[in-house]
Image (cartoon, rainbow, N blue to C red):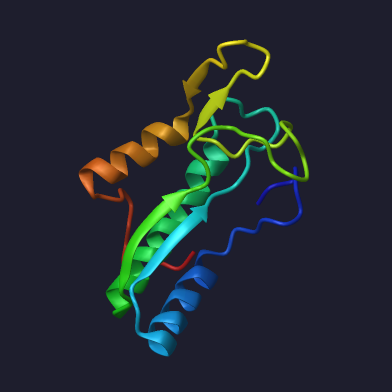
Length: 134
């Protein structure tokens, strides 16, 4: 999915399978944290790769809920571009761009911020089909 790094893969079906396994094995509520991907180089504010990634993984979570998994919540990684241990400030995970050259660290929402806000407030994932495989 992303040529800029080789350790994050687009595998929503794997997330669904994992959530179902964890639910059956441990029978406790599941909170998903730090789910996201970095920008593809050159996307800047129009981070369609992240929107695609989030949409697919949110669909997989909804499918796991439909399967009976007890999912209590989901958070993305990350709200803002930040310092990553391996890549410093070069890899961008945020749904808000941070200008690290600006002393005030100006923050600008990316396309994915609007997408995630719409899903979170409307509780509707447009284009979602419960039997759709990703």
